[in-house]
Every structure is written in C-alpha cells, then in structure tokens.
Amino acid sequence: MAHVTLEEYEDPHAQQFLAELGGAKSIDIIGLLRKHKEVDEFKLADRLKMDVKSVRKILYRLYEKKLVSFRRMRDETRGWHIYIWRVEPGRMSKLMTERWEKSINQLKTQMDYEKTNQFFKCENGCVRVVFEKAFENSFVCSECGSKLVFFDNLLIVKQLREYINQKDAVIGG
Ligand SMILES: [Zn+2]
Image 1: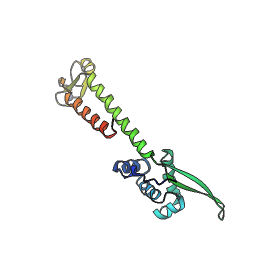
Image 2: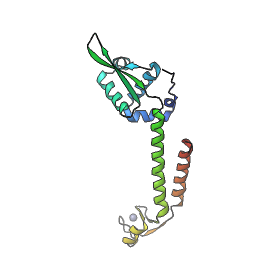
Image 3: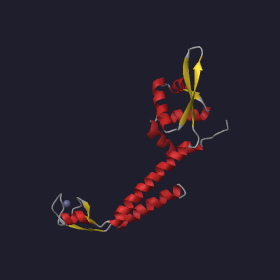
Image 4: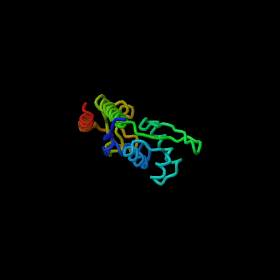
C-alpha cells in the first residue's frame, strides 16, 4: 500500500467536521488509524479505553460517510470475525468541499432573495418584511402597530457578496 499522509485531517476545520459527524471520540479513532494504517476494533477500544460497542458505533457512522473502510478477518482461535479498519484517503477533503459548496449555494440563494425583493422594517425594529407583505398590512407592523418604513438592504447584499467571495477563494473557485 502506498504511503498516505492523510494531511487533509490536519486542517482544524476537518477536525471540527469530524467531531460533528462522529462525536469527539472519532478524532481519536481517526488519529490512531492514520498512525497505524490499519487497526482492528478491539485494539482501538483498548487504546482509547472505550468499549468495543461504542467504538463500532462511531466507526459505522464514519463508514456511512465513506471516511473509513474495513476488511473482515476470521479469528481462528476464537471463531469469530474481527473487523480491521482504515481511513479512506481523499474522502475528508471531498466531504468538506461538498459542504463548502452547499453553504456557498445557500448564501447565493439568500443573496438573490435580498436582491429581488424590497424590504420594509418596523420603526421599532420588530419585523422586516417584503413589499407584498407590507402592502397587505397597510404598512403597519403586525407586532406593535407602528409604521413600516422602507429598509435599504444594500449592506446585507454587500456582506453576503463578501462571504461568498471569501468562501469561493477557499475552494479556489
Ligand atoms: Zn413593530
């Protein structure tokens, strides 16, 4: 097997993402798998002072995301199967890119919404509504009864555009 450094896991965002996917302990599990290439679940449990069942639960969660894979071996003396796990190279960076793109798309949708609507805001700041809604309510706040006044969202659009550019820059878009 070619030597794989799995540097994708050095990124603090990757560690955080990993913890979100499989809990804090998944960072330790991936750490051991990176270090030793292949480790069976009993050894993992032993090293991390966890029970095998909990280790397996985390591994299955990571397996669902294809971050880890396993091969099965029969333990002749005990007559059962052991699962030997390893990290799938490249998978973490792929998942992170996907997540990044998804959040960029959400920001773009939000920006479109801001750009294609006119907004009105309560003088007391209770609500911000689109023109149609403000019109329906005769430009009166549904919360406090005050006037709804035109709200310039240029700053919001500008900020969204900055977020999008920053995120685009990270994935080299
Ligand atoms: Zn109000």
